[in-house]
Image 1 (cartoon, protein in one colour):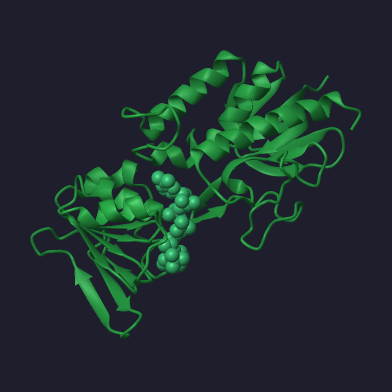
Image 2 (cartoon, protein in one colour):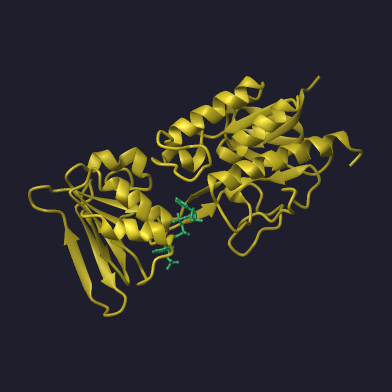
Length: 313
Ligand code: NAP
């Protein structure tokens, strides 16, 4: 007979891992599906200073490793698989993956969000060749080189400061003259000796033959176009893009109601409009996207999934 899980959790970031912990602890037959790397965006974050209880040693990867250990302790099973389609209606939901078909009584969608691209010439072709979306992963490659960081939110400024530990200099380029980032983070970045700012500006094109060698920047106030090339001695430079995130809703956006930005709308119990289908973490329409809110979402979704499968619906 086909195995029918109590809950399949799609996505293994903090929301999915927290849902896995709560579901497994409640003795639900729990499967967590993860596409590539465990941990979601936080796995690529160096410092996690605002998750309660995580103090100095709390890097993103360490926090993820602890979350994984904890949810496996209670019996949640993780499987690497790419979900290709979902059938969400009815009492038994079907999850199609590249490893085969899975059945479940409830689903928690915790696929998170992916980096938004600048969408300019040179960006895609030079990704991994000097263009990066992850400071923890790549900052060290730019030791003693010039780096340009695009974006004006918390991520751009925080990651800019992390990159500055390695780079010769970091120029943060933002399209407006006021930052979206928190005041405390702005003040810290402004005091940083290796960080410069270029405001009311944005990139038009990334240049390079095989590796990034320059970037064309437009000043939106004056219309002036400047080409910044790597120092002759260096030959190379780095570009980091932190201009926000887009929800990973490709699988479900035609099946569930999403807000204008594409995030899944749920009620306060993380329930979507389809019975037995919940959404948790960054994929959900909400006011604050942080590890602390993702883990809370995951816990609520798991508890509600348990209530759902124990009810007559
Ligand atoms: P964000 O807050 O959405 O900021 C995105 C930044 O990119 C904004 O400054 C935006 O400019 C700019 N931008 C957007 N589209 C652009 C484009 N096409 N070209 C150029 N610039 C563009 O994203 P985030 O900084 O990644 O943060 C995401 C969430 O995580 C936020 O809720 C943030 O508070 C949270 N976060 C928190 C921490 C922390 O608390 N320590 C750390 C990291 C992230 P405008 O300002 O002009 O819109």
